[in-house]
Image 1 (cartoon, rainbow, N blue to C red):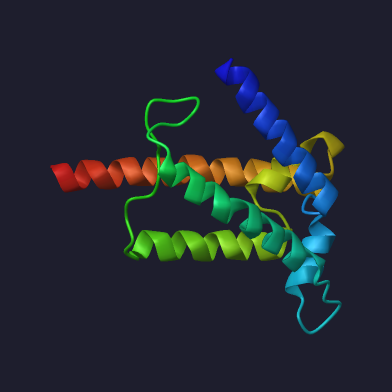
Image 2: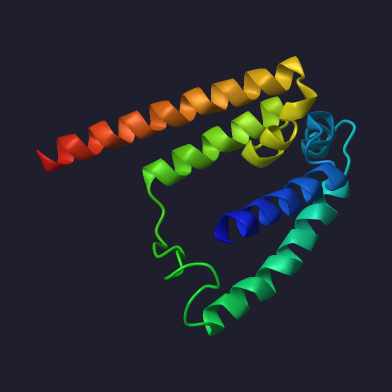
Length: 143
């Protein structure tokens, strides 16, 4: 049942990304092009996402346990460190240059466009490299 609900949530998320235009890198890049062909429509998508998420977090905090798990996995840190800032910068640069972030990129994979395939493969290499660097860093700190 948990797998089915996960699949259903993923399909709903992917459908929302496609319908909102987030899976179209040109639309994302036009949103980021403030002094060119700026397209403000994604601001409404983000506003809608925030409007749905805020009450969701409020409801989550009222529950003692999640529907499909034992405990909630909510963020506990509130500080800014170098890893967070560097990661956000790399994410933003990749989003601006490629017009994708991970969710829409995976959603657009079935189209098979060269840019999408390049972005996703590069993203996966970056994820493996980041995990490897983090493991080496933890090993050095514990030694």
